[in-house]
Length: 226
Image 1 (cartoon, rainbow, N blue to C red):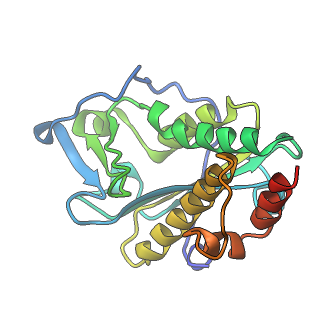
Image 2: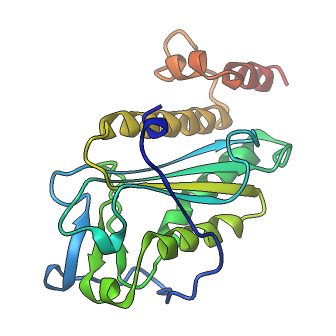
């Protein structure tokens, strides 16, 4: 709902010639132009999956706020990936869980030159250091977005991806973080069921997640009766 109220730039989708590192390159403070989500500023990153083509019709890169070459100093930041899965690709719950984890791990394999992800899973943050040299050479969210797209689309279960970057200040980033955490809880609940524990739903700490998400409870009870 927040995004629907913001001015959005639609960036060009296509192969990028921007140099990709084999692993995350080190950018020291003395070499950086600024940090996205630096210090105590919001640094949210998350993914949401669907099979609904109305929600993710095609590959897309959206930007709400200034582009990398327009940012003068540290700024709030969010990267949201909306991923459409191929219908009926997963036949079993175990495949679904592994597939979701595979999609999540994409963020560890995207390394555009001059763009250093500083992922902290314990703090649920993903700030990014951007080098002055990369900005001088023309790095923008178009190159970064297409770097992410190429990695997501290399997975056989992914049909299309919409990536949204946010660098505006007047947005409720806390609400986006809560959405990210809820998605992680759903994946965790799926993992919990696959471990074949005989659960008492009345005492399970994930009961509220299963109650809210259509299908999880049915999947669990179906598994128990097999």
